Amino acid sequence: MSGKPQLSFWQIWNMCFGFLGIQFGFALQNANVSRIFQTLGAEVDEIPLLWIAAPLTGLLVQPIVGYCSDRTWTRFGRRRPYFMVGALFATLALFAMPNSPALWVAAGLLWILDASINVSMEPFRAFVGDQLPQRQRPGGYLMQSFFIGAGSVVASLLPWLLAKAGVGNTAGPGEVPDTVRYAFYFGGAVLFLAILWTVLRTREYPPDTLAAWDEAPPLPARAVDRHRLRRQALAWLLAGAAGIAAVTYWRLDRQLFILGGLMGFYGLALLVRTRMRGDGAFASIVDDMQEMPAAMRTLAVVQFFSWFALFAMWIYTTSAVAQVHFGSADPASAAYNEGANWVGVLFAAYNGFAALAAIAIPWMVRALGIRASHLINAVLGGLGLLSIAVIRDPHWLLLSMLGVGFAWASILSLPYALLSDSVPAQKMGVYMGIFNFFIVIPQLVAASVLGVLLKTFFGAQPIHALTIGGISLIVAGLCVLRVPRPAPSVHPLAAR
Image 1 (cartoon, rainbow, N blue to C red):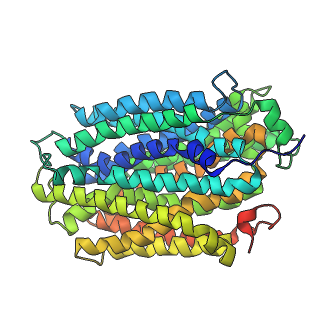
Image 2: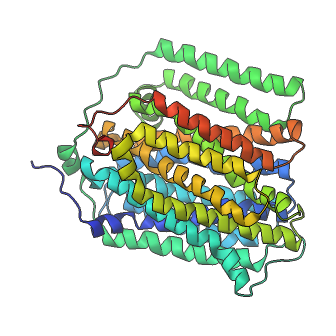
Image 3: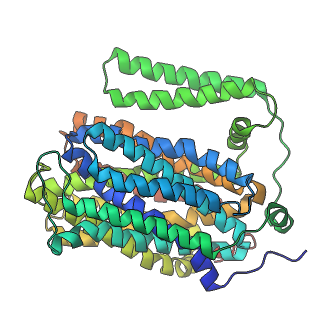
C-alpha cells in the first residue's frame, strides 16, 4: 500500500483550528485564575497549592485518554469524540468559574476545567501523528503553535480590551470584576465553536489503515521484569515515606507533602503492576512508561526545567507585576486590577511573539539544528523573565515578553518534532500522554516548592519566583545539548 497521503495547507489548518479554542481556555485560566483566587481571599503563598488541580489533573487524565483514544473507533472517528466531550465540559466550566461564590468552588472548577481541556487537548497531539506523514508533522505541530499563540493573544487581551470599552474593572470584596466575567463567557463560546469546526471539517483514518501506513520503527518485544519493578517500587515508596515524615517531623510547609505523595504514588503504581497479569489499561500505561523510547527519556530533563519556569510565570506574574510595577497587593484596589489587566496584555504579547516565532523556527532549525535553536530560544526566555525584576516601567515589560515568546514557541514544537517519529501509530496517543508527564510533574513540583521558597527565603515577594523561573529556563536550554542529535533522514526538521 502507498504511503500516507500528504494534506493541503487548508486541510492542516482545519485539523489544527480547534487548538485556537483550547488555547483560549488555557490563556484565560493562566492569566486570570490567580486573580480570581486572590479576589476570593487566597493569600499569595497559598496560590500554588490551589493551582495544583491543573497539573495533577493532566497527570491523571492525559495517559488514560491517550490509551483509550488509541483503542477507539466509532462512526464519529477515533480522536474527535474526545474533542467534543472535553469541549462541552470545558465550556461549562468557563461559564461558571467567574461566578464562584467561594474559594473552594473556584478551586473545584479549575479542576473540572483543566480535566476537560486535557480530554480535548491530548488527542489533538496524537491527531497530527495520525493524519500527517512524517515529513509534514513538523508543519502540523508548528500550525498548532501558531493557533496557540493567536488564541492566547486575543484571550489574554480580553479583560484589558473590555476595560478600555468601559466595562467595570473593579468590584466589591469577594466579587470578580465584569471584565473577567465577560471574558470567560466569550472564551467558553470560542472554545466550543473552534473545536466543533475541526470536528466537522476533518476526517480520520481507520486503525487498520493507519497501521498499514505506519512509518515508525516497531517497538521491541518486552517482558515484565517483576523483580526489578518491585525493587524500584520499594525505593520510591521509601523515598516518599521519608519525605512525608521529614515534613511532619520538622513541621515544614504542608505544600511539601505533594512531593512525598508523588514519589509514593509512583512507587505504589509500580508495586500494583507487579501483582497484575495481562495487558489492561493500567498495566499497559505503566509498562509503556518503563519502556518509553530513548528520545523521550533524554528530553525529560529539558521539559522539567522548561515547564517549571512556565508554571512559575503563570502563577506569579499577576501578583508580581501588580505589586512591583503598579504598587498594590490589594486585589480590591484599582491599581492591582490595572496591573492584572496589564499582565493580560503581556501574556497576549508573548503569545503573539510566539506565533511569529513559529514561522521563523523552521529557518532557524535549518541553519543551526534543533538543539542549538532550542538552546537559544530557551536562553532568550530566561533572560526575559530575569529582566522583569530589573525593569520598572511596565511598558518595557513587552520587551521581556519577546524573549518569553521565542521560548514558548520553541517549547511547543521542537520537543514534539524530536519525539514524534519514534512513536508507532498504535501507541501515538498513550505516548503523547506519557510525554506530558514531563510537563505535569515540574508543575506539581513548582506548586509544592515555590510558595515555600518565597516564604522562607524571599519574604513572600512574588517577583523572585520569576527570577527562579528565568534561571530554570536557561538551565533547560543547556540541558538540551544532552539530547542525541536526530539523523537527518529520520526527521526533515532536523536537517542542517
